[in-house]
Image (tube, rainbow, N blue to C red):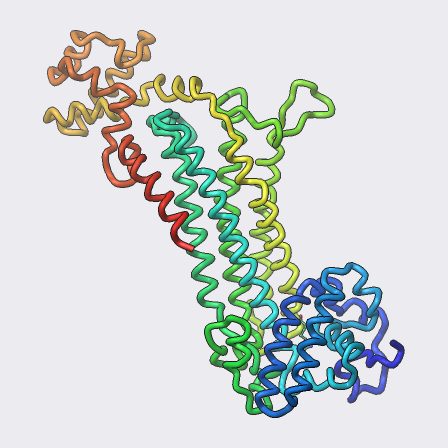
Length: 466
Ligand code: ARG
């Protein structure tokens, strides 16, 4: 081991590196997790240089087998860093271990390539996998919401604007609002995936490989659509990391809104949700408590996602072309965002499936407090009263109800007719909770048959597109 070169670039240097600096600038403590991507990219590069005549068929075969061995023997072993103390980063590590396995042949692997294109490639592969995992998790969560919505049938709840009760909606309609957010998140991630799926290998350090490489060989081997079109951009582009963290931070904002609503609905004051015990915790001090730790933690985790996107944006801002070492700092936020969202999506579907609504309390909230006032005004406007006027008449009826502690449907027709001659017997049928729902009979509205259709359509979209 003492014969191993300590650096990949020591030739022009006479003085040793300052020890603290040496340790501090290493990325191996965190980029070790790119080993699968590094090995895949190295195998693809080996094929490309073999096609250019740098490796014989036999050499290529031992190179590929050696790289597989590096992965198999060291994958995810926490002892890695200890065993190979000289490794500066994952690229250096892979070369050192490969040299142990196949000798000096390993040193041919770096022909026509640079770590600048390697890290750009490894990170693209990592982000691509993370996008796929996130989209998979999102589909599962969306389907859990759809199942809960289907299960809630025609049960109603109050909707809120300004956190004041607004109009009755189907519980299913409320849950589908989150499905809409998730579908936008999925489309943002899929869009990012399409845009990033180009291969930087062959870009060299900045100006392109110094070898007449057929860049399509490596691109194809790694499942990329094509090679990147510009070497200066490809070695310093981190847009795909920005796209990923920004998409995931928007997703985190959506999840935090869900978490906040569940937290609120689980309070004694709302009393709409009974928190599943399997996902709640008690208090060490107050024996009566059941705390919504899952939703609170999720609300907190979303802050880390925004943090990752912000770190990357600030990192890239004002950075001159092309590769700069600053870019090494972009890896950890991406890893953290990927881990954080994976964790959140590992608990959300089961938590969602376990939610129990207190349908009686939700219905009471939806059927008291004049939430049918807009439907009542609509009744008058359907009878020819201009809406502005109808609004005022119903406002007067609500005031009368408030003063005498009666809901609109408890005010007799004679009293209503004193406010407007347009009131008739059929008024009461027009302000039942069902009628109040069904008067919102537009695409995207909470009319019962519209929600049924929306639910079916969501199910189809979420299970068919893949
Ligand atoms: N560890 C480095 C990074 O993550 C790899 C690229 C190093 N390139 C260089 N020219 N020093 O950015």
